[in-house]
Length: 438
Image (cartoon, rainbow, N blue to C red):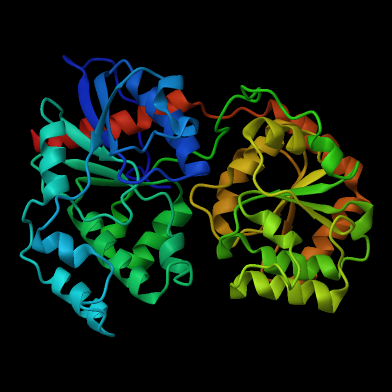
């Protein structure tokens, strides 16, 4: 780590507080929304911040699960949809011209040839919302054009998953995302990334523009251990007495197929069955007659048929559960496994497990090594693209379980950064940008 890469804690000597407009173009479910609701209150309550306003898409907080009122009182500005009837609006619609094949691509090309730096409807709204603010902080700059505004912009690229796994969105949408992001990386006053692993990825993807990115690690406990809300007392009746939990969504980089392929060869799997928790993971319960007509899900049906793996014996797939039930399941698990191929700043489920004294089996990838460098717990590391490596880690985990468990319990007392620490680093970046602009 170089001196340039470090973000120093600001001194409490500013003559007036920083005024920030936070723009969140998209509310990302799961870890993204939890991160936002932890980070923004900490920034808003920082002594060097005078006020923080939040700009979101119209109706973004209709779902109370993401509502900010439960976390802090701040002014929320809802940005309306793109103005109807403009050339830009028509080009942004993902539709063919008169239904003619190939014209959708033509529209995308035409969109990229629009005159640069012409304020659009969103930019005009942002410009108005940012009146009286020192800068705009964009929490999630994906799927969005860089706005034409007069205030400096700081943004965070939380990961590079969409670039590294183009199969998530498809080739054309990934290409558009790359081109949009290239503009953000070039024109933002400062780009923040959550790990040195992601900074290296940004350099690989965007060259020298990625080299100036500022690293602010934030893979810490995303919420209090005691989650508000009542846990479903029956949730533990849906799983075996002893199990290994895998809490994650179903995106390709989470690596479910490789894990289940290894699991099919794991001779001791019924000693400690695997429990899947997360949106859409209950699709694993479907058979050929009912499975969704998507290749990604159909191949699981084939895997189970070929290997003889049985649902609710070898593995359990619960689908989405609320936060209180999730914490109950993690707390009572024999272990948590994270076979991920990519993360941004680390893994929040891994952090939660270790905070509860639950031992972890984890992908041996740079970002997870970086995340867990400050943790004392013994980790069962494995290569996420090697079945043999997974099997070796699983057998070691069960053979020496008491050792892993005792280490995880001791690690509950590891010193960890706080959200106030992270807010300090962001506020320092904001102050640097304001100073440079001034």
